[in-house]
Length: 347
Ligand SMILES: [Zn+2]
Ligand SMILES: [Zn+2]
Image (cartoon, rainbow, N blue to C red; front, top):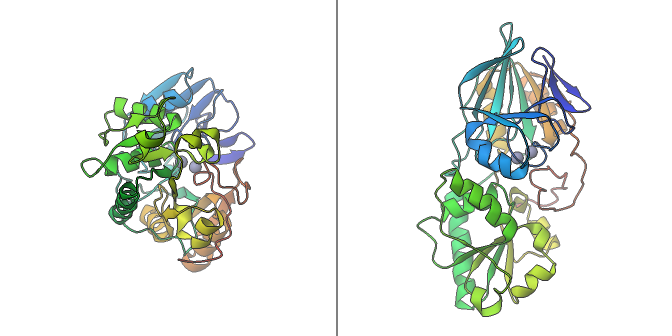
């Protein structure tokens, strides 16, 4: 019912693409991350809560929205969007044709996130799952534990009048951290411009977060010495950082589970916080769908497909994406783009 094409996942019965990476006539989008929502398509359909963010990412797009759980007919298919728990507005897309049901999960997580609706398990025959962190070494602590670690690091830096620069993915992760810090923040929070714009889109959508101020041109040095600063990884090593001399630098990502990565990249601290499912959550989710066929994409897809076939007796396959194979590079979007980082050392 859904096939992998050079432009992305295509449903012939409905004549639409899901998360296409080439411009198409009709794109159904699971969420606004750049490896899923590409510009140039004639029309977009997303879950209603994702509209403000998708509009900021693709400003001139023709966007239609659908509330979670509502079903529409497209061609010969019945289509509905269901929460994926990944970022604001992220959705699994359920497609039904002649009694057969497929679910395309996009990216998802099972941990609670104050910025979005929780993942909803959907029964289906075929489940397309992500595999960004599909190795047994990837297990997450509760977000609360990680937030306490961030607060402790920030507190210690404040006492030394050192800014705390926390690099994180600008869409989703930054806002999740701000939401977790609501009512718990102990000092000023400042945002890099790239984080501030998307945070505005979250506030426009009604997400409650800790107050935070955009860093403007004249802000530097002493003015930021007690601040927690959220910034994209791409700001690291740029002139922008000159305003934050002597900063302690940290990275918030599931990649920080592998201690060697933190050392190798010379972060003072690494905080394990991911918007993707960890290994146990991936297995539980697949089992929860009741699917007898599972197609795996994003990241460690071969490892997960092999495990599900050999240990669970499922029919499996893998789907390549256009964003595979940026090996080893920690970029701003690296967590979402599923880098094939050798997990040499377990925490
Ligand atoms: Zn994503
Ligand atoms: Zn992704």
